[in-house]
Image (cartoon, rainbow, N blue to C red):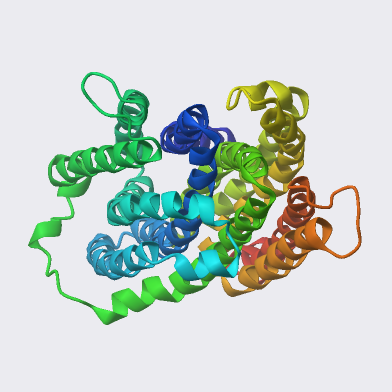
Length: 454
């Protein structure tokens, strides 16, 4: 049974991974294209992306909790309840989209607070206007993806995402550098290509939602599309602490990017390379965590505690193996990776140093995301928020700031690597702490009680 479960999780995870990598490649492509266009464009992209990601990830986290909720109801055989929760999720999506788009249109206060230099501000603001239009589309597609993953049909999402990647490369280059009668648009070309492709992705998702047998069985359009506050509360009860936790995590890296912006375009560009790669390889443990938590929640809903415990063992065995393998690539190939993104020696030299630290950072990141997703399946969300706040803001962000800008001069003063040193330590502490919380939560749940009886 364990081998069968392991194959099921890995197959699900690989399908998700290819799709997530396709989407994450959007950011890597934009970083590479903007970096080749000029350093100012890459610096503005770093600032704009940091603000956009903070808002997007925070709002997405509210919708992300639908995955274990949908999976648990499916495991328990409550299809009609699942259909109603999908509808309530759409109402939540509408409210989140309006709030997020408004925040992206007015980023001035945050830029002033973090003392972002004047030069890249105007370009970053223009970029964020495009992202404000893109946000509702991305959030709705994220909800569609959660539904597909809970129903065991992630391949639908992956096919759309890979098609989008195929379109992204030529469109980003064409819009940015111009040609064939089109005037070069610079960084705005990257933003416009993302907006256009996200619209295409959502169009394909809408077709699948209305025609694929996995969705037709629920008769969504025969349901009553009115607000049901009990359903909304079920999602929000997990969604709010999940969003706060995600906001703490991503805002620490947003603030990192904005603080590093003070060091100049070269430091900002180097950091953007390291941050882009950290986000790219994060998709490996993220995909495995999504697949494992979907199966974990399904078996919890079906009250099959033995199968649920098997999922836990499989998940951590693979997360450790893959984390070590991925980190090793960065320890050995940091210089080569940095040179893929920039031809400027000053940028690649500093990026190479930070990519070594990204390898250490990834180990803790892999542990924490698995612990976080499995804790969420057990409805434990508030304590992880406190762990994230203490480690990522306290150790990572504040520690990095003190090393970089503190009164005491060190080898890392005014060096962007200072933030990555502290963030790597913070992430490892977080990963180990969440693992401990998971052990305690399992012991207090039905899983632990069943194990003690046997």
